[in-house]
Amino acid sequence: MRSADADLAHDWKDARNRYRNLLSIDKAMQGGTQAARDAGDLTASGLKTAVQQMDRAGYALSGRRFHF
Image (cartoon, rainbow, N blue to C red):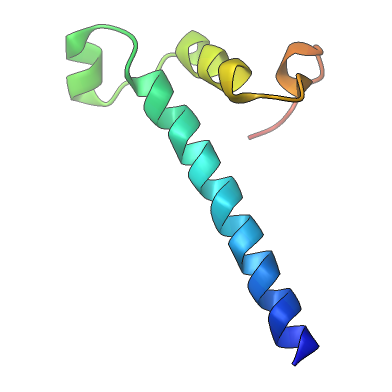
C-alpha cells in the first residue's frame, strides 16, 4: 500500500507543477497586443517576465539557463 501512496503523492506533485507552469503561460498570454492574444502568440519576453514573477526562489533571476 505504501507504493500506491508514494505513486499518488508523486502524481499530485506532478499535477501541481504542471498547473503552475500553465498559470505562467496564462499570465504571459495576458500581455502583448489584442491581435497577438487572439492569434495565440506568446512573446519570449512576456514568458520570461511571467516566469520570473512566479519564481519564489529566484532561480529564473540567477542567470542560469534552464530548458523548458
